[in-house]
Amino acid sequence: MLKELKVCFIGIGSIAKRHIKNLEKICRQDGIRLTIDAVRRKKCGDEDEKIRTVYTAIDQLQDMYDVIFITNPTNCHMESLKKAEAYGRSFFIEKPLAAADQIGEAEVYKEEEGKLYYVACPLRYNAVIQYIKDKVKPEKVISVRSISSSYLPEWRAGVDYRSTYSAHSSMGGGVSVDLIHEWDYLTYLFGKPIEIKSFQGRKSALEIDSEDYAIYIAEYSDKVVELHLDYFGRKTIREITLFTGEETIVGDIANHAITYLKRGETITFCEERDDYQIRELRHFLNMLRGENEPEYGLRHAIEVLKISQGVLA
Image 1 (cartoon, one colour):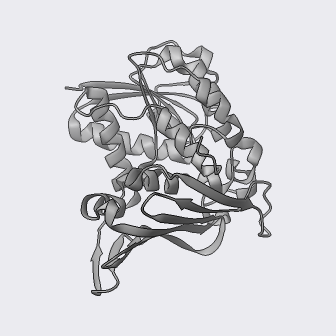
Image 2 (cartoon, one colour):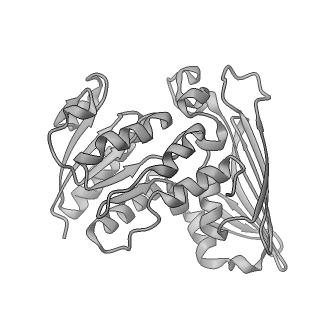
């Protein structure tokens, strides 16, 4: 039974603030005493009221934490993990594990025995993906078409998109890694493909130096998968379409619905983003308690990251 949870966040951006809010909710519901420290460059913002101690460098940490959340820019994840290793019993690392040019560094990293490592990809806990996982047999699927299209300047309210990590490849930005959720849930549903081809680059007028599109065709032994990712879609589309011998099933992730096109049936889910983020946090805490088996570690995250770059080896 978990009575107390001592955590540290490395980086306090929008996703860290969401995790803090959701952790507080879980701990209130479960009667867990939560203590939060953080590492950030400077103290600022109302969220500091929820944080016991704010450090400006990882090597200033003084405690051992139940969980260290690594929620800084993508290109800092591996360095932060190495520096924080001595201070954490478990690590919740925001997706993706590393930038595309850091895959080799991630592959040679040695996980410490007895510690829990988890790379977050909450979309697999979304109601639409969970429905497909539970109700659609993967061997019945002949073809898959998946898309995530949205407009980068509207991602973060009040923030100039040109200053974000998404806009800069040197900071780990670009759709292939930023929208790695799609490859995570596709491998969660169907496993690893046996062959993949991809096109990645920049076509829009967005003021970024990272790629704004990535398009893939992946071959499985019994199916084919097409995936489209972009930063320039002016109307958000996030869908997965499954073609079986009997039905065409559309999973509308953005609008929380499953539609069976042939029989004309739609199932809708009442869900907010925090709902599936909370499911993921609960799943992680259950692993921490020993109630769920630890899964993957860093291995799966590295495989998904390589697939996002069109590499299978």
